[in-house]
Image 1 (cartoon, rainbow, N blue to C red):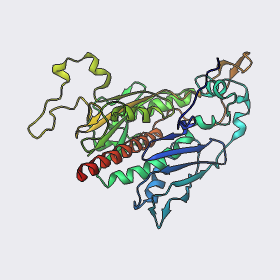
Image 2 (cartoon, rainbow, N blue to C red; image 1 turned 45 degrees about the vertical axis):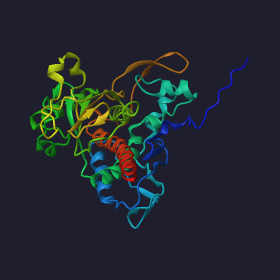
Image 3 (tube, rainbow, N blue to C red; image 1 turned 120 degrees about the vertical axis):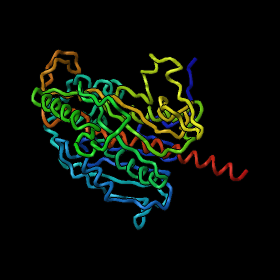
Length: 366
């Protein structure tokens, strides 16, 4: 007997969208004419600081070997510099493409890249700069995240990310920050550690290799009560948001994996008389709900898989081959990924803040 599967209100292509009340959908490929996005559910009346968005994109571009102007063309949802409540659509032209660098990649399976699983899932893969799997797609997230951050700033919510590890160079005092992060391109809270990180990046560049990194993120002034108690925990949604970023391999908040080696008497955050806590091992989240303390978490990213060294591989016919990368490739996702972590955090938080405000409105009516 044939089995019939009925999908009720289920978008099978929902993997290109994130969020519910504030929802971003991205489109476009690395070497297509445009990348772009649609932000739906953004509250009306927000004054958008376009210069601030352009500056974030400019800072993101500084270390990239692919030099794009990242000129945003706003298509809808704005009037006189303010959001109207309608979907905000925008596109960003791709101009600085060298597609010829990827002609050899048409049949080769690049080690640790997306093309194998894309090919097996869809029957085709975009070998021009990895298509949707390229870091180029994250520009859309950054634009949407900037809009979310500008709304969150009206509640004094501040999001900042930092490079706290590249290879063996580690800033061990996170989340205790210093202002030294503002004085180096990696936004590392220690100048001395930043110098070690930069030396590692230079070594990788000379060897044609790449290196992984860990990004720390801090959210200040987050209200108590964001997050749901079971399946939509704030911690779970933050993890989903950050783990959707290219090359992300691990997420932890608060003391994270260190909790496995702690006793309860060490890990528990004891209360003060004003309901603040003496420590913050829980990273600002209890039972999936923000508790009013500093929110902090880290995300680990693997090395960029495209290295400027010959690698053994196979083609789509199963024949042994050698993959030799061409073109322009970064040696680490940091510092470019810093703005992406902040963007996905902001998009996650604005969703939870809008839900939280709905609860408050319901309580007032009762």
